[in-house]
Image (cartoon, rainbow, N blue to C red; front, side, top):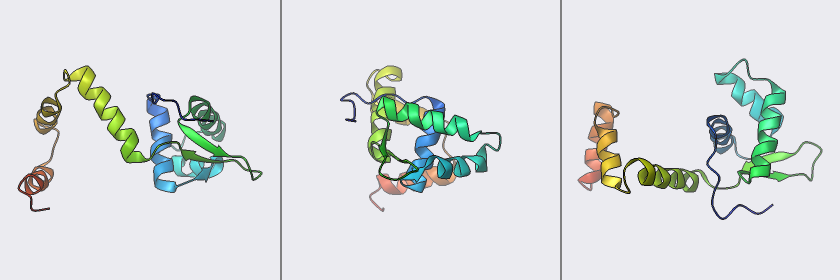
Length: 126
């Protein structure tokens, strides 16, 4: 299945599955379920499998069907997907201004340690 030209915006549950797959690498539904149990002990295997299948149908995941247990992988690398989500957020919430997004994030959503790291990057020290 080809990846859609315009990436689909994942739901919060789908984004959780993507994060797990970015950490795990290509994985079976059982492997994703086991990883999901770490943060969501109530997560049923059937729900993970259904979610992965829906994500594959939407083009968010690829699926290798050559083995008995299908192996799922994100259709886009993490940084590419995150960049698309950020562009969408900047356009919708900040009238296209990346500066306004950064300023909003810095106004209380960043720890002192993170601010210092950001300042080092801005100063060209990193």
